[in-house]
Image 1 (cartoon, protein in one colour):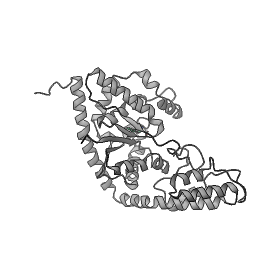
Image 2 (cartoon, protein in one colour):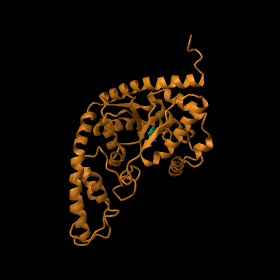
Image 3 (cartoon, helix red, strand yellow):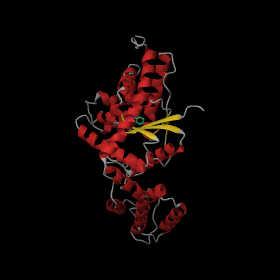
Image 4 (cartoon, rainbow, N blue to C red):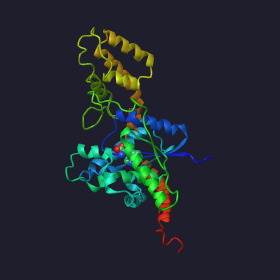
Length: 341
Ligand code: TRP
């Protein structure tokens, strides 16, 4: 049998994960993991998180365990997936150094996602060098494991393109097919992004419009009841709008009973279905989906050392793979001077 496809994917630990992450990627990762068709590596990208948080390492440290708990809670299974911590894999740093020599500064400055982030983060004239080159370090993350499949959000396409360029340059310059070209796997159109509670296109901590996987039932309910709907739907009997109505976007994403959702939509559009009622229904749907996740999270949270053990074991396993790739890279470049001594 041919070698299995390899998945590498990651999150920056800058806070707890929310149900937007769940829709955008976590749910799909669990499915891919359970398909048995892939060798799966899931990385907590603490080094990448530090590229714009060097002065607040405590935030990253705290978030590391939160993200690990979120992974375990949604069903990422350390028996099936290797969960690793980026900073604990030294080979990634050397790979990054080698790749930095075959990518130009102007190419890095042209990366559209990095450009947008630089604007959003208001670095001004003080863009950290590490931030500008994080796509290179991300290429190291991916290639160290010879991943060919990278499930990510749409905003990561420029990273994938840059990674493929680096891989091709490397293999070409050193005249050897050492590195594997990776391809992003993106959520189906229209399904990848859950809007925030306020109807903003993006759910995020900074916009304060997120439901977290760790939220307790009360908090979740309060957030659902505060959600943005159709601002012109004032009286129960008024006809309401479905388009851009966050409650229905969430029902589409979460309610397995599609027929019921279709019926509710029709009723809402005709008039006669109140916002409070439809929000209560959404709340039930969400509570049912997230109760088992919440319980698993609470169970793992009781024993943080056990969680750290899982990360340690995963990182050790990952080091074996990454070290092997680094050897091949050194061989290709010819900096293996002492190999035969
Ligand atoms: N940049 C990714 C994000 O912000 C996180 C990440 C780091 C990543 N290294 C990676 C994603 C490698 C995929 C592969 O979501």
